[in-house]
Length: 372
Image 1 (cartoon, one colour):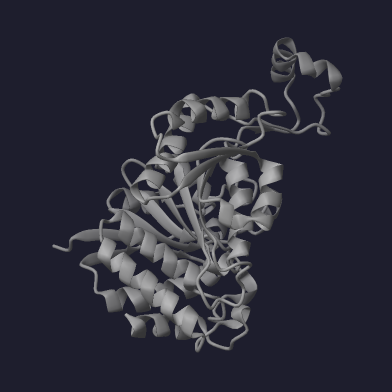
Image 2 (image 1 turned 90 degrees about the vertical axis):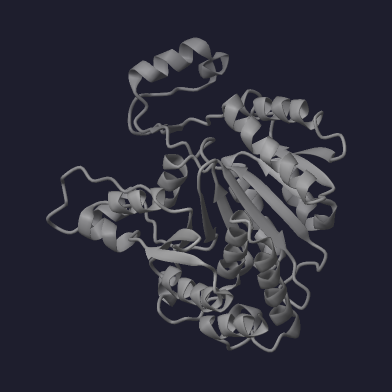
């Protein structure tokens, strides 16, 4: 039997293109693994009213981890219009499959490395090496939203909040409310994961990115937990920064930062800026990790206009494969892959359009495979 079972979810759009590129490299690495393809994405939403079929969830449960491409997501009103006519008006509501997977499998760690590879013409600076730890299940992405704002909830909030007197929260359709949910358990898990990563990888510092001067309760809880846990890691330098200020400091002095840890929305923002500093989303990989399984994906979207053209940069996907190898304990193989990627970028002979070249998605993958 193969050593690993890996679920493969190409998705749609350029997710299919970059997954094909991933298998150019995976075939070269010859991992002892069985790859099982699963179904997810926009076409299944249109045909079945579910972008994440239950059969795909069951597949993931049976595997060691999942390699994910990209999927198209649209607002619920637009999504409803694209349903098969036989499904319209039957109560189907679109939910992002990747968000659902994070919640179903409690993939509470979203780790996003953002490293500048020498020779990349898109680098902001060549000495950037950031890792963002984003809490992946709560915050403003918890999905607890209301529009209109129900009377009973409005009255309960008004009763327990001194600030409610400042606002006229009418119950009609003109008021929308989202809850930012932060629990101590989730704060402890993501912050400890960031410190453990820093310790195990000889990282010099961990920075908390929040906004406790305004979001006094939710960011305040994150800050309190951070200060408690940091005492257990005296060898790691610690910093605290407000989300707005860190945007400025990362642009000015990104080399001053190392590991950053934060809540869901702030992590999304911080990691996108960090990705741009090292060349854009074409270089941005991510690992969604829980206690029992993990999912690895590039952070770019499905880019439908490029679907099937094999034009986009596959480096983010290949770096996601590297993260998967690390997770599986194949450290040497992961290092070989990262070195091959770095060599191809440094050489500059093969470049996709975003890097000023003419190479295709598969050309880039072939170049990395050759270096292996």
